[in-house]
Amino acid sequence: MEQRPPTLRSVAWLCLAIAVAVLVVGFRQAIFLTPTDAAQGDVGRIFYYHVPIAMLSLLFPYLNCAGSLAYLFWRSRDPLKALTADAFALASAEVAVVYSSICLITGMIWGRVAWNIWWTWDARLTSMLLLWLLYVSYLMLRKFSATGQSQTLAAVLGIFAAVDVPIVYMSIRWWRTQHPAPVFGGGANSGMDKSMLPAFFWNLAGWAIWGVLIFLFRFALERRRQLAQQEAALRAIEASLEIPQ
Amino acid sequence: MNYLRHIFDHLHKDLRLEWRSRDSINGMLFFALLVVVIFGLAFDPTSYPTTTRQIAGGILWVALLFASITALNQSWTRELRNQVLEAQRMAPSPASALFLGKVISNMLFVLVVEIVLGPIFIVFFNLHVLGNIWLLILILPLGTWALVVNGTFFAALGLRARNRELLLPLLLLPISLPALLAMVQATTGVLTAELDPIQINTWIKQLAGYDIIFTTICVLLFETVLNAE
Amino acid sequence: MTWKSFFDTSTMAHRHLLAAYAVVLIVQGGYFGWIAWNWFRTKSGRY
Image 1 (spheres, chains in turn brown, cyan, blue):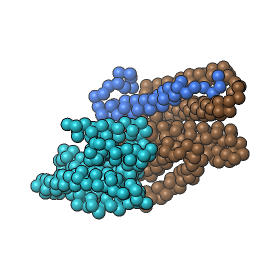
Image 2 (tube, chains in turn brown, yellow, orange; image 1 turned 30 degrees about the vertical axis):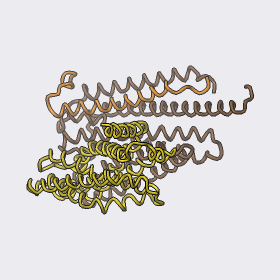
Image 3 (cartoon, chains in turn red, orange, blue; image 1 turned 90 degrees about the vertical axis):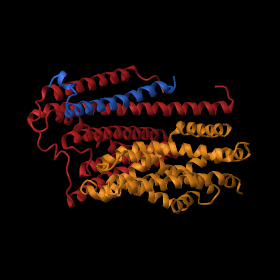
Image 4 (tube, helix red, strand yellow; image 1 turned 90 degrees about the horizontal axis):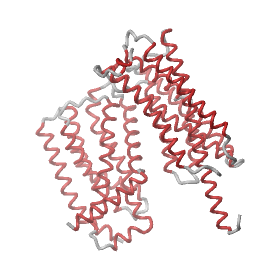
């Protein structure tokens, strides 16, 4: 691998600056410019962080699925491409966990003050919790399985998880319409006032750019690790051959 | 003092090994969380608060029981690698020191899981404790010790068995039933405030008595189990 | 809302708002920091 081209570095720094700038604008919109919500008061401003992040957390599981499928496809055909796909899958799983954790925690904080309960087993929350559990278990499998196997096993689990996500969503929704229970938020997207839109879209854009950025950063880190490992293995083999290089 | 020194050395070794990978604690935590989620889906806690309070004690202890079983087997398997167990047998220090060191380390891990699990439990089940919550600080460690002391002993007992992982729950659950009864009743009594304090105290005393009796028996018999061939 | 009222911790609502935003920034920033720390810890590919 040649020296990482300096342009890529500058582009990365530029994207980081753009992401931070958009987020700062979003923060300003959400906190200072949007008028206070009549029903919820100031605490309703949590909406502008909670909802975009919740929506984005549904994106990364699909990236993981794509990466896992690509890994299994290339595993016997082109091992180097397979390695890249594996790094892609791992990075997207980690970012999925980060985003859904934030969604759950901010949701609980908001629910406590707005509806006086930390948690309820309604459709949306339960589905998000199960999504979180699925991808945490993916990361645990990665950590616990024997090296050599872990990539293949994780790819298989990633496919299971991705197939499970819509099934979980449908089944939980069916369960909750059978026995109605308290619902958080009552359709947060259904009645957005025009004054809320700028803050919402700035934050959505900001967290989306940030999400893609840290995903790519994590992906790059994983590739760096993989290449360092390959390099070490190559050196070990060369040393054992005792052929001067 | 020498005996305590041995126990401390064994404890230190186990804590250090666990700190390096944190496998056991992470595994236990995630497992207990999953059990809580499954029971949450099964019983719909937010719609039936009274029922939830009545069964929450049982669910907590079932979650902890199964979480600790997953970690107990693993605590001995690390002695099997590199023939460490043979070295332990040949060491001049008393075998019971090894046992107590392991029990204390397992106890600490399960206590950490409990400390994290408690608030999660309260959040997910929307529990409002009706009784004296400080009693739980007494009940939880006593109950945990009962599970862990017997669990560590039986995990060592089944170390050479063929179906080692299966054997532990089969042996542990029947022996622990009196302790489980006491800890679940005491916990439920505190949560629902349906038992008066004298009854809860009786359960706590029974639990403490169980702990003392079985700790003594385990310490006395561990040497036999370690050297059984 | 103003900076002053944002950092005002007198009511539960304000504390929770502040806590929610803090959690988001801490978790995202923490994750970014963890990646960056590991980036400098791993030796690069081949130079």
